[in-house]
Image (cartoon, rainbow, N blue to C red; front, side, top):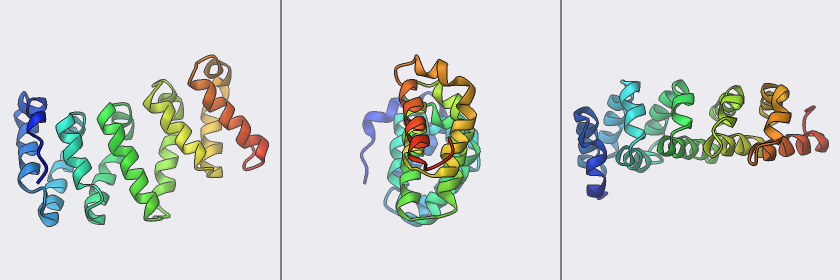
Length: 187
């Protein structure tokens, strides 16, 4: 059983969050119960977003991810719907990265491109977040998926000069230019 006592205060102020966190602790070893609880949590996307913004929620969801494909799919659906809200928060960002890696390892050919498309679609917004957003855009470019890279390049094309003056933004511009030079896509 996962010991999350030290995170108790992160959800204590909000009774709904605290109740969900306590329930996660109670069922942390039972995959069937975790699936039910995951479905219950994601049925209220606002609650899910608030939950994964806390360290207790992050650790609970992180523990549940990877236990079964059904649980991962439940979380994926809410992540796809609330992508911009989740991607810029510290703990929920890590959940998104974890689920991307899980579906990539499973070679789920439909899910991974969909997530990459969401990153591409939100590329300009993500580059405004110097740590998490830029990291995710770089990760998407490094995948070397031509469609995703072109999509990112098109979303950012009128912002290259502005990005090149930012420390981390210049990395994105360099990566896009190097991808274009290598002939992987017509950037």
